[in-house]
Structure formats: structure tokens, C-alpha cells
Length: 533
Image: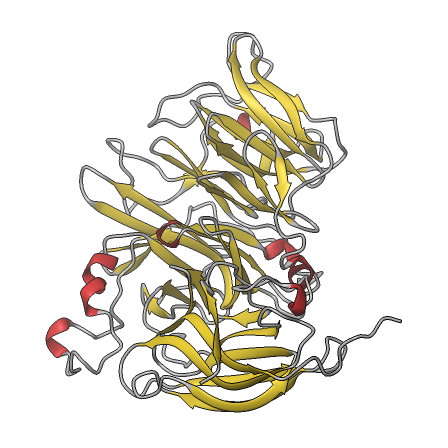
């Protein structure tokens, strides 16, 4: 038996595509799709199943509303010209009687100020969900936000509740017949159950105000609270607003004078601040400084593949249950988001996964079992099923991601099963350029010992093996070897090279993970080494 060279903690580095594979550290992967990283392992990404059956129209945006003292939990689906509420197993139309219009370049956005839920589509006057005794109802229609029209305003590009105020950015002023692109406005103070009584910033007795952000030319695109501040994202800068009290109410300071946001909804909060998509990188805004995080990681792969016409459909969502942020975007020739860059903010790793043409994703409580799969009707044997019976009931009371799939007019719950709603998904992870500790010498590999786990029976991974004699020559692949970890512990090979590679792939209804790899080698000299005279 030769010497064993271990590669451990293969889930610590994620996928890095900006750096040549032979320059990567051990534990980093050079390609991959539909995998995730955690527990020092690389694992197959979970599947998704349809939930909230028969959504009436193509969902463009999702929101949740929970009434804690009554246990009511609502899901809202915002379509192009309709709004529907899911409650008690069925959908109800809650579209305002005034009707809605649609602009494909403008996304929906919702915000909450206490119990007050406000929605804007960037075309119509903002809406709110009326309350009775401090609660909404699935039988109550949305209405135009009270007192908004008093200012001769039509729509707002973006809105956010902050402290006891409601903020709006890039308002369209009907009297001026133009959009106030660099203007931010806020309402009078209000309580947690009542919409603002006034937006009149000229009233000396009120709290409402207006501020024009002239430090950069770009328009206001998105506003969102970050801890005790309000972040105002423009296309070319980030401005922070802080409450200072009367008479000025708020102060405004440029946080980033040159970096802006890609589009509305392209930002999400996580424990370290805001993650947002810019025009050429993704950034972390911790409230003090804006830091790029994709450079020399996976930046080139992402930004070379975003569709130039549909980029404004991109959005960001936080998967709190898995410590991940998803930056979702449409690739070339895709109308909706079909790919997600996933950042694990605990171990700082990146990966990629496919999406089913989604317009939005929202974290919330969604039912796990597929249609018709009640417990009493199951015929599966405990040892032979891939269904996670032990976690399903608990999954139904924690927040999981729900995907609004505009492409096929469905909603899907993530982390449900191992397929794409019954369709087998392909997952793979690949690493080339492995020098096994010495890039200059030729090594003879006689066996590879993967540390792999799978679920269920007949769970076979496809394993490819690669080799190179130099970084300049192309990679030679051999395989696939059908590897079943239940009955196999190693893969026998007879390969001499300086650099090696490996690829794990699956296309079945099962889960798997890789925690380490061991190469069994016998040194073969330094054939092909450089000679300096």
C-alpha cells in the first residue's frame, strides 16, 4: 500500500472560479452546481415541492403576515394586476377595487410599519391592507394608502417603514409631471396600527419632510432599515439616514459615494448587515463600510452570465434556517431568475444552484408534504425511503424559503425532498489542479478513498477522475465510476500525473455528501520538471 494523502474539510472553501484551479487551496472546489456547503462537507442541494396549490395567477412577489395572538398566518401573492391571499388551504382575491396596472421593469415591494402592511408596484398609488381591531383578514381587500394622494403624488419606486415614519423614494409628482428620482420623502409620525395621517412636508406643524440627495446623479432605487438606520440605495451610491429629532427629524450622510445597487429588492439583511447586488460585484454593508465580497471568488462567472435586458428582475433573500443569502438573477436569454448565487455567511463559502424561473422568494412557514400525501396513506418502508419523516413535522413550524415560480404559475417550498417537484435534478461538484502537496513531481495514484455518505438504497454517485502533466495542457477525464458507499470504500485507478482532479455527480432521488478524499500514491520521480541553466 502506498502513501495516503488526505484532503479533509472539503466543505470549508466553497466554489471559487475566478482563480485557476491549480492555485486554489485544498478544500476549495473549482466548479459545481446544485450543491451546498456546511458541517465541513459538500452536500447535494435540497429539492423543492409545490405548496399552496393552484395559485390563481403567476406570482410576481410573495409576502407573509402573522397575527400572533390569534395564530393566523397569511401568504400574499402579488401578480401583475391582482393580489391573492392564501389562508386555510385556499386562495382569496384581495385586489383593490381601483384595479392595478403593470410595468415589467418595476418590481413589487412590501414593507411593514408595526401592523401596517404597505405595498408598491412603482406604477400605481401605494396600497395598504386595512386593519380591523389591529388585524387584517383574508376577506378584506387592499386599498389605496390613505392621504397619499393629497400631495398630488402617483406612485413611489420604493417604500420602507422606519421607526414611526413611512419613507418613500423616487416619487412621481403629478403636479410637476415628473419623477423626483433623487428625492426621499417621509410621513408624519404615526402609531403601529394606523397609516400616516399626512405626507405634507410643507406643514410647519407636522413631522413629514423631504430631502433631495444631490451627492450623486443616480436615482433612488431601494430603501430598507438596517438596525437603527435607514439605508437609501441609489444606482451609484448608498446614503444612510439617522433619526435626530425636531426640527430636522433626520440626518443624511453618504456611506458609499461610488457603489450603488443593481435594482429594487436586490438587498437583504443578515446578521452582519445588508448583502446587496451591485452593478459589478456583490457587497456587504455593515452600516459603517461597504465591502465587495465576490472579487477573486466567483465574480466573473456571475456577472458574465446576467441577462442585460432582464437584470432588473434580480433580487436577494436570506435563508435564515441555513445561514445563507441567495442572490437570484436571470442568466442570458432568461426572462425570470433561473440561477441563485448562494453565500453561506457563517463559513463564507459560495455556491450556485438552479431556479425554476422565479420572480421572488420569501421565507415563511409552508406545508412540507406533497399533495395527497397524508400520513395514514403512506406505504413506504422506514429503511428504504428518502423522505425525512423525523424532521417533516418540525419543518412545518419553521420558516423555509418559498419560491414564486412565474414560469409555471406555481409556488414551491425549498428544502423538501431531493427532486425539483418530482423531476430528477443533477448536482455536481468538481475540483481539478490538485497537486497533492508537490506540483513539480509525477505521482502514481493507485486508489482514491472518498469519504461519502448517501441516504436510502440504490444510491450511487457518479465519480470522474482527472489528471494533468502540466497546467498548460487540457484535463484528461476518466469515468464515470459508479460509487456506492454502502458496499464500496475505494476506487482503484492506475494514473501517473502531476495534477489530479475529481468530480462527484448525482441525478437520482437521494441525498449525499462528501467530507473528505484520500489519494493513495507512489512517487514516480520528477519527470517533466523544469530545468534552469
